[in-house]
Length: 257
Ligand SMILES: NC(=O)c1ccc[n+]([C@@H]2O[C@H](COP(=O)([O-])OP(=O)(O)OC[C@H]3O[C@@H](n4cnc5c(N)ncnc54)[C@H](OP(=O)(O)O)[C@@H]3O)[C@@H](O)[C@H]2O)c1
Image (cartoon, rainbow, N blue to C red; front, side):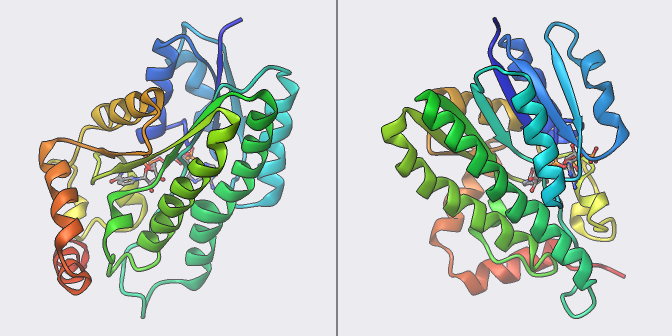
């Protein structure tokens, strides 16, 4: 039987590209999204078996729904990609607190709840690979996306720590840190009136996914998702003071109107 990969946020963007690349490697896909379009995934991946799972990961019921459908497949789980995430742009003074609470529920709480189930399953199997999509935003303060960046920093730190714990069980954990990527992400975040509004200058999601999938199978701890310029920016970030990085980030993220 082919191997099985669970991917959250598989209906679009980086998650969809990761799903395509795992399908190319022969993995059957259990793909999660909150809207109807997740049901189109089988047509996009005709060579493998797809289980579309429509669930809202912001809720505990959504997580339970995902997991019960994975368990119902009654197969080993070889790969888990915790990728679904959103942002919200704007000054913290003005942004909607409920939307920020929902973002924390999706970007942090849902990942932790799902990771708990995934690692217990993979530890029992003594085998498995986990890819966690965080962001280059984990490496800098993110003014005008002031809650989003910290959610990614949480997941980066979580991934690096969990990796160490899972070593003795034969399970690898890899963090993917994409730079700005040409998906619907910034439009969904209401950032059309910032430098992030245009997709013209951003990384190709296919390249970002490729970097993540290759790092996953190489068992690396983390990888920057993007082109050479993006990777150079990640190196520079290591040496700049936080206040300088905050000012540089604000130039791109501050709404123009
Ligand atoms: N694009 C970038 O510039 C960028 C940069 C760095 C890091 N990232 C990270 O990359 C990851 C993917 O982002 P992307 O650019 O691919 O965004 P995207 O194109 O907007 O895709 C987001 C995915 O998450 C799913 N999703 C959103 N809310 C959900 C919910 N409540 N329950 C279940 N699924 C949900 C979406 O499915 P439905 O809409 O069908 O629900 C979609 O499949 C995120 O974790 C993000 O932080 C992105």
